Image 1 (spheres, helix red, strand yellow):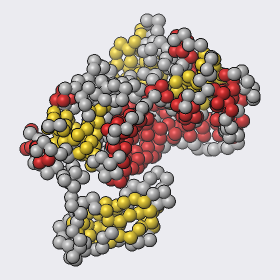
Image 2 (cartoon, helix red, strand yellow):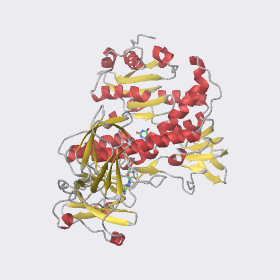
Image 3 (cartoon, protein in one colour):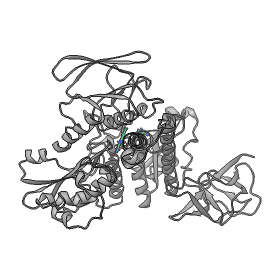
Image 4 (cartoon, protein in one colour):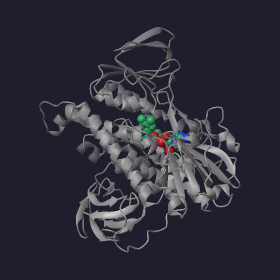
Length: 599
Ligand SMILES: Cc1cc2nc3c(=O)[nH]c(=O)nc-3n(C[C@H](O)[C@H](O)[C@H](O)COP(=O)(O)OP(=O)(O)OC[C@H]3O[C@@H](n4cnc5c(N)ncnc54)[C@H](O)[C@@H]3O)c2cc1C
């Protein structure tokens, strides 16, 4: 008997158990792939459990009313046995058994000339209403929203993790936002325990870092959250086409997309295409990344020990975050930055405060440098550069992280087959609503203009899915918040004081320090401030700039205010909980009108 296990799917980060509802099938019944076998009820939602394969329900392990946990065995399907009862005929399989892309029906020989499906060949109905290429935060959210709106959706994803397993979630979930924040949290707690617990009246002996455990925890979070996207795909009946997606021209009104992987290839058609292929790390010319001595962001999230001396090229968001992780764990970190200004795109007040605080923490940052060369040995790296005054310098380190930005990813995407091409910087040109010049083809996220941020990609995913649905959504790019997850965190939305002054706009600003806030004192987080800039005449909020603990959460209030075109007086008049860091937002708003209360 060929056994396929039916297991409890990933529930969610916060939900650990579910209750079994009645089985829709009994032992001996025939089941079709993806047919719903049973539902599980959690305190938040009811989840469907689909059959992972077609066959006969050979054994039912859990019964109605049982409490079950993620990954627990529910039943066994025998994929070879005949049904023993007069079970109802399985639900008709979808037009194309789309949920089986990992084992495409075509032989490997078909790779050179992928076959169209019968539907596509006839030039009539497309296999899918929407095919999304890429399942990062842009792509997977676009797929879910399109499915919520009733579209038949597939998402092509080629990501294979270090263990050789196909994964959804893109850069953000696999090697970006989520794992970096997990390591930042571990290192931050370590530093707090080491340097600040004493102030809180807690003493500890034998404090130690276990890098393997920290990295293992990060891996477990990545596994859980990428598994969560798989669950969401199943829940929303989105087909995951595993492999590399390539546009292959048109079949009548529909677009053809070839999907290849594992030596096989198949072809699908769609009425609408959303390109969400993201970005990849920019490398230095002639400096190969071996992830032993020279790493990009991926390698820097998987060090197995703390380097004694760590060099980082690039003092941007990712360089600062990764530099912070390893500094807190004990590395001597030096960051080399080509630009003459530190955090040049942020408000000058943030730049000054951040430079002061990071220096105090022991992060060495050299600005205005020009890298001349990088030499590596088996155990070290030597970086020769010119400092800001043009003097030749050498930096010796055990490891180097190259963090000089990211480039849009359009590798082997077949853009030309439908009359598209990337611009000179590699981005796919789109209008303000993410439409390319080819009708019904959209591009979103890191592969198009605008900030390379996960939440920007997500919002564009929702936008495009709703446009396809005939709605009229809109994104105000000025209201997209930015966050740097150093400690303290740095977050901002809207314009900087320098940019507004350069525009000749009459403004007024208010600033309030965390030092004067009771909650900040209580939690020992008195570094930083919130600054609000408003129009001098109308009082409309034009920019909010935060450096403080929890800035990533505090900024959300500013985003809401700006989306609603609030005045600083609005925030000043809104009741804020006491004691809380959010009171600093209110005080900064009052300070715009020179009437802060607690200073
Ligand atoms: C270390 C690090 C930390 C970060 N931290 C943050 C943060 O804290 N906050 C934040 O907002 N942003 C952060 N970012 C940026 C964020 O990860 C990106 O902005 C975001 O992932 C972009 O989403 P996306 O959907 O456009 O593309 P991606 O997440 O890059 O996903 C694209 C997907 O498309 C797939 N793909 C590409 N081409 C093909 C093809 N032809 N066929 C099939 N599949 C294909 C790729 O395999 C990938 O899975 C961080 C990035 C890094 C590297």
